[in-house]
Length: 313
Image 1 (cartoon, one colour):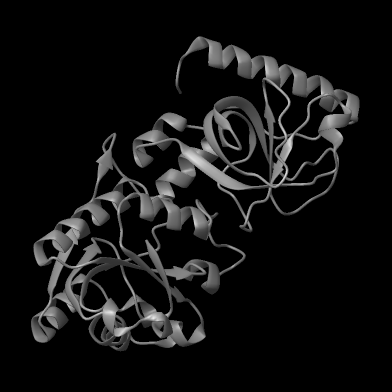
Image 2: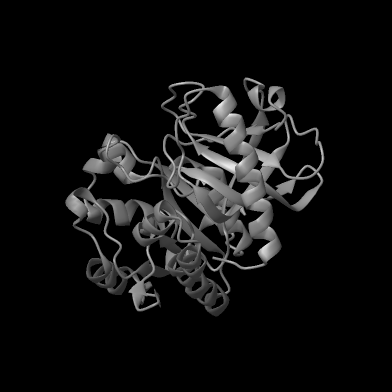
C-alpha cells in the first residue's frame, strides 16, 4: 500500500480511483466492511482503492485532553489497512485550515479535484467538514452532479450491538476480550520497538522488554496474559503490564512491558507485536519492590495456568 501525505502528495496518476474516508481507528469489523465494499467498487471500475484518513485524528485535535484513547498508532492503522488489500492511503493533516473548511469545499478539493473519484463509499455515520455539516446525502447530491457513485455501508452488529470504536474501547477497558475479538475479528494487538528501560525487571529475575508506544493514551490498563510475535518469536506466551508503573515511578505516559514466560531473548531494538488474550489484574501500587516482585511471580503463575487451561475469554 502506498502512503500519500496530504494533497501535495497527489499526482495525476492517483486519479481516477474509488475511495472512502474515516478515522479507521482500530480497523474493526465495521471498517473492514467498508473496505470490502470499496474493493468491490475497485473491481467494478477496474480502479485502485484509496482510503482517506487523518493525523492527528479530528477529536485529538479538537479536544486533546478529553479525546478517547487511541486504539492504534498510525503505523498500526497503516499496516491493518494494507493487510486488507487497500492500494493507497491518503493521510490528511488535521489542522485549523482543515477544521474551518466547509464540507462542500473539502469534498471538492479531496474527492473531485484531488482524487477524481468514480465511486465513494461512506460509513453510515460518517460526518465531515466544518461543524460536521457533510454526510451521505450531501455526497450523494454532489456525486449526481459531478458524475460519481456514492454508496453507504450499513451498520455491523455483534451480540445485538453496533460494532464501533467506542464499543471496542469500552470492552478493552473492562478486559472483555470475547467482545474485543467479536468486534475486531482478531485479537487486539499493540506493536512497537523494544527500548532500554530501568532494568528493574532483570534485577529482580523477571527481565522485561520495554516497548515504545507512539501514542499519548491507551485503551486498556493492567496486567495481561499475552502472546508475542517478532524477533524470532512465534506466538510466545508472556505477561504484559500496560500502565504508568506507579511503584517505581510516577509516570504519566503509558508504558508496555512484556516478560516472555520461557527463555531469555535478546530483544533490544527489535519490533514486537503483542496480542492481548486475558486480563489478570488491574495495575496497582506496591509499598516496596519486594512486594512488587512477589506479585509478578504470582502473575507469571496465573498466566501459565490460564494458557494451560486452553480457554479463551
